[in-house]
Image (cartoon, rainbow, N blue to C red; front, side, top):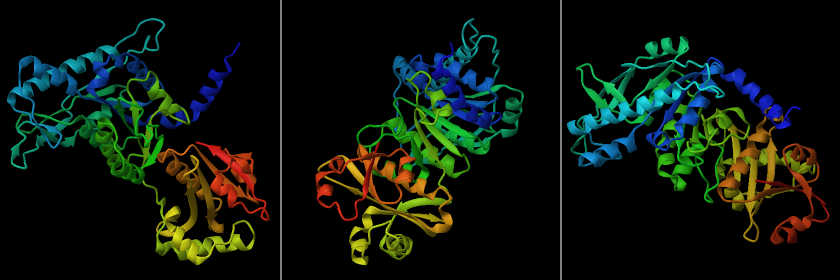
Length: 435
């Protein structure tokens, strides 16, 4: 008897399988993931990707391994601006630690036990002097010595190995034209490689669920702009704070999607890539169409959008004075600088609910998905504030909201302050969506 859940999951994954075939993904594995022992199961998931035709470049880190070796040797550790100052003795440790991590990764990728997903895989791992580096130099009077920055990727050589069906494994060590080796930052290498190869995805593994809201809940999707706002207005775990700026940079420089995935959760990589809900945080490039907080300068555009809907009875009439006083609760959708939609979100102190109001889209753009974009924007804003559900009052657009996950509710389900303001003459229906 077929397992229904398996069949549905496989069907859900099929469009992604077709999309990712022959595409390049850059996966950044930090030293903590290798040190924790979780890479063995992750290696099986990487093998699944390669068997589906995905081209993989794997960039690894080795910070905890370096720290352990320095402590064992009794050598001092020095950081400046969150980068390790690498003297000659430390460089020797860096080489040893990276070599050990690389061997552990290659061993895991070489598994072929019967009854495992890697049986018969014969996954070939390629490496080499693909990274050209130069010294970082003197920063704030501190000589960074053998700490370097990536100057160039031999992208032709990497592409040849990928086209041959091999997985390319890169250690964060680069070589100069003078024959010196330099210690590089894993996240910088992964970001540079993804941009240069025009990769489909850049994936970072972190020690938690990904980016989180104020209540610690996982944020599943962010635009680059939202990610910047999140970093500016909230405290994120150290690894998220380090990798999220790289995800922002990559998406703005041509990588369609970047992901932060829990390296300690078995199967998180496959769940993130092949399910609608994902398992981590996905960062997308800023679109030509974007939603932003409204300002006083947008009031004229908002009035032009809502007046026809007010006259037809779809929206409640709002005065200019009301909009001016309430403008901070509004957002607008613009395409190439022109406003085509608006929405408002109102919060309540007496309940963890928010009201979605004044959703309007210009008639010529109503088939462009702009209404869904405005809805998703409000849902994101609500989640980041720890709000449990959205509600909307409507007289003529019930089916639109029903099709997007809202269910009909009673007036008594509204916050008390909103119940007191309910217009019984208008007889709007109430719809609620849990977040």
